[in-house]
Image (cartoon, rainbow over the protein chains, first blue to last red):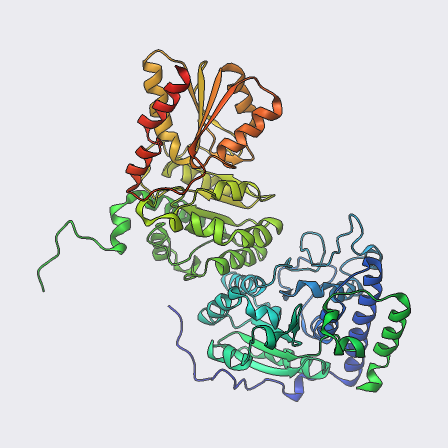
Length: 302
Length: 325
């Protein structure tokens, strides 16, 4: 039924991370700027809602910016374009960092952002594919996204399309059993155009992921499940972009990929990085000002 | 050891040959494939129980085996639908509606994707396999999920008509079926209309409203009572949601009493749906809901259970006669 595995092992992608896929200096500056923009906009939108997931969006800001400005095949004017790359996230609560990017790209008017979470606005805490152009799949209940991504990747194969499906999942999400059903299914069906990204920020609502129910060893788990697995600094947007582009270009791969993006929850705001309680919260405008200043200084801080 | 097995011996993979009714699902899906529909069929390690083994054999490139991973199956089906396929995924109704309830709500119904969820061996039709394999809650669960159409075909021919009609139906559908051994109610090829009840008999004393497995025995019961001089009608409410309110109102206006019969808990299923319509209109008609009365079924072969719970023709006749007395 299925072809025999070729002799590539789970981690010897010949193209992964090669310099030819690296963004140029100009691109890199643009990408960093967009990650910064995602964070600043998340603060602005959460000011409207008066509560939100700052830190979950901050840990993923470079991942969002890399995917949408540097990796994915998209036509913002045509959100349902059949050939587009797909993106979905199990950690749907990070959507506040993605909505500004979709608006910036032109998927919907930027004014829509100004009504974030207000009655009748399409943008809520979690993304809704029926309401928001550019959202490829709805989410909010953790654990479903990798399965939906498997379905999309399989459908792409059945329909003879060559798009890639990117699925971002949280590290805490790995505690959901359905993720491992999808892990088996994706590997069994050799869904080679499926690229998972774990936002390994180390925290979930009740504390540190590995204090609650450890998900380590993450890399060994995915490799043993038959996924080509890579680890990258999730805030090094140059490295993230280089890796994701090289993975897309690798047409000889015979299996799905999982990228473990090592990130910091709340990245960019010192007191959020230090306090896991910021998974959910609200910044008074006085404090938001300081957070904005810190984020703007990120480039200097490194 | 070379002695051939007795003809009475059989193993699981021979189930389909023994139960020709199980071909209905595969045959209907294969017709859609031949008509050029982007259909895929999937199951969670039950291809012989639901007869999809035939589809898998004849159309392997459109068959997806999910293994014992029902939740992954439902979410992945939604993903496939989001890319333009029409997935039909099947497993026991107990696992589909109860284990995968949230995947159905979030990924299929809330996302408004044209996934067809086939919950087979519904009700207590798995007999002595017990409560884990019974589904007397699935209609109530499916009915309460916004955007989900709920149908319960009475036999293989009606299932085939539902599948044929589903090709052009934009909404997600929960299809509740039995175990491929239904007595014949319908002729093949009768077009199915979602949301439209099928009136078999009009009645002035009593109208029985049934769906799925109870249509055939209810029809037998109605005919028997009519032969004894009563006027008993029968409506097949094959679409439980959206329910055909007009048909209920007509029946409840013309008859003194309404009896709903379902292989399901009397709470929240067909009886509940009919009660909502009758109460909503304030109709002065007596309603009796018959089915499983908010309890877990005993263990027994299915036909024994139907007799025990008065869901066979004799039992339904007895319940109806009690109302008519």
